[in-house]
Image (cartoon, rainbow over all chains, first blue to last red; front, side, top):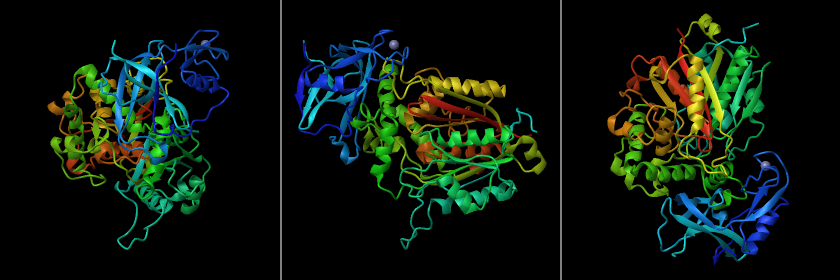
Length: 142
Length: 400
Ligand SMILES: [Zn+2]
């Protein structure tokens, strides 16, 4: 199973530096997966990927595929971004809680369904002229 | 040797009005950062009744990225011709900066490493490229690879708080926005304030959006300032004989999150504010009810409501009632941000902690003029970083 892919005309957000710690995550996006590191010792899930588990300071992780199912915790529209950030103005961001128990901040895609706090939303992969990224949108109708 | 437990007094202070430190009508700069701060430091020393040679330590707030001069702390001491046996350094921790400069200067004094210490700084960024400050703010409050790329500035996180709070407690934007009106009413009476003409709630709600639902008057504007506080031991202050205030209590807490944790938590609870304030009150031997005025770091309208709830002034979801009931106004039961706060007194971020302490000192010394809180004996100050992930709290009292 892979996550939906949405094509955006904008370039990816700026300054993303792929490292040995995060490479697996970024490669996963290209394969339609949003990968979460799970600590091999205490099983804590983390995001973003990191070198040391904040739960137990262990340093080995396995990767878990996120289902993409999430709940919208909060959102805002930002009307002022530095030009080099390659963002629309205004640009929407959201805090979402993945069903796996991970909270993260991401871009919120424009949608004909208005976003509702506490309602279901989903992770999508975004395809940009210069690579892949990720965003959230209200969950697809059943 | 002084006792380890020496209490610390603020024996002198000076500050420039908050606004723009830029150009004269002819377009020539009146001075650079060090020029403005040198003048303020000299005034603070004469207010304290001491000379530059008495100063043993100086803790500077870090300059914003628009400042050209680096090596600022020692450069500045050379400008002032002051040599020191204690510590001379710059500190910078986002919104905590001013409070941290004060805290370290106080520790210099209480530990005996300094008889007299300065906590001081200058912010001059209004004339610089706004995108430099915006980019700096974005990178300071988010993971540079996983949050900052979405362009969320510090006030964007408060907007996220606001949306969630409105949903959780069925509170309207207008109820929250009343904080901006109250702040402006106080600032109208403060000669140091950036914005002093009164505003109405309708005007606040009609402004263009900045970080929704917050509009132009519900978030702080760019601001410059310069300020210096002079600290000594309490007994030294008594010997000097001038009016002073003392640090009665101090508390700090960092919750171990940077903005949000990767495991869900209640984002609008601000536990660090509750814990740090509790520690400071315990040390002072006071209850919240005994505090006469509050200077609480609150860049946005929603932030003031959340922090007043967090420190226990109001139940969760009811902080906005303070505005309609007048509880936090100048003549209310718990005056909050009598200076006008970040929204109207103004918010040069690195200095806000010091300006808050300055206001408490003015109030406790009875020097606040038309915004004077009657019989003010104790003031509570907070500053914070992130989404109130960390709080530094000080209780200040009159030096009897
Ligand atoms: Zn672990």
